[in-house]
Image (cartoon, rainbow, N blue to C red; front, side):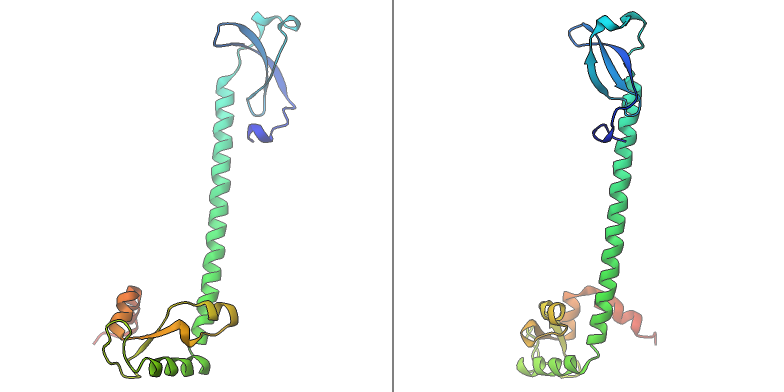
Length: 177
């Protein structure tokens, strides 16, 4: 528990020496180890009071810091898990869309619009070997399908150059000869 969260219900008077050498009495919280407040010396036998326990304060600060770090790491892990789940769901929907009649028709329109030419290296590609690359996924994310103005024709080499992971996926999908 950090100082800012502690209600300081359990305190005890302790003796401390200020930087100017003056001895004073602080109430020290026994839960968080912090100084709660300075109190008058006249109500205490100052010489018999225990010294302010800096080790307790430091230990409690360290525990509070570790608890905050653990909580942050747990929030990060939960966020990453949620993001991974959202990404997996998106990839599933997108994979299904790529098998749809809408995508197949849009793909043919994009390739025809680009005159069967890679829009990066300008080589001629046949309909069967042409790749259609998304410049954005805004349409898919907003309405569930892509628009021709979001896509361009690329040859396989340029598409794999832009998406190196496609080369690895292609190698895994192709059985060894």
